[in-house]
Image 1: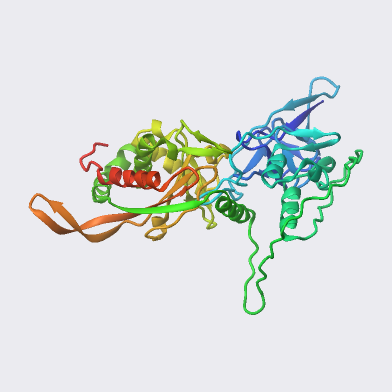
Image 2: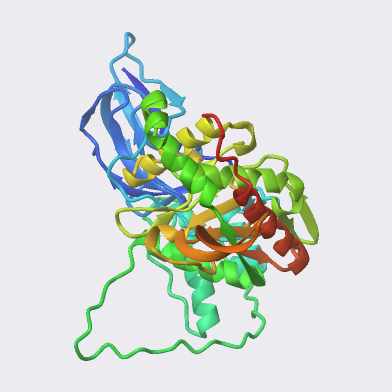
Length: 450
């Protein structure tokens, strides 16, 4: 017989760990190649981990809700081998698409815990204690020193501090309360020797607002995705000074062209053409004119992204939002953009997005007009510096300039609003970019060939 290691798979360049949601298979259960063994969650999506071999589950090494670093052995599979000696063969697993679990994101803006994009610290081991890159990143962003970090009792494997531990510690510290860690997972290892006690710098505790829940009130617990969205929104507001600019565009030519070609387009390409790829096309053209809109901040440095990856906020059946990303949107023609938009939207609504589908965005588009809103003030999707919202298209009487003079005509009008990070995007640049997008939409060629 042979024993094969099942490894926590890599799920995107920025994802360093995942939480175990459910073990589908238990020790002693038979498993086929590529059959789902467990369900995991990251800050972006939920996924299934398939088996890398056929055999019997010999052991599982972590419990539900454990946070496990990428590359860690999470289970062992006993397979039938030609030789009698058991041998251990680590095999990297591949994340399968998740058809049933909820998808994690960030809303009109979502990419979980919002930390300004900086070089991610490597995992370190301080004596007998291990700290993951995510824990170190959170500690750095919250001003927690290594001495203070050593005082946090970990609930993870071998007493490790997990993301949950450090976030609970930060919340307790901000609220002036005491921190009580979760019971650590029982592992027969030597208890790490605590370092000398260090008195943390005094902070001014914030007083949480208490809301009475008496009377005719229904109490609904937030699901995990909504908690991530809530944190992402608050962190984005704390990170970036938001400014929102508004303009309007006469999109009559665009509306009439789509109405004219949509049936023939669908018949020829087997794809429905919506307004979204047309909006993305206009945004991409303007980003090339104003490259600073496609950037992020790293401390006191500005990182101008050469790749143009457009995130599009998409509504889920649960009511939450997720932001799948159209990679290299500037390299796609209208048909390519249409296929990408449709594929990502369908995958999001059917909970089939892959982890990589929600990473790497450099600019975000959200269509609040889908829900009937005329305009909105969207929150920036960190670590991006801008997000553009398009409102509902409405017919309105407008003054139209003609060779014969001004006249009143019925036009299809749409409001555009864009929130941007005032640390690097000034009002002149923000307004200029937004105006350029509006003019690009207004200048749409009504005789364009498909």
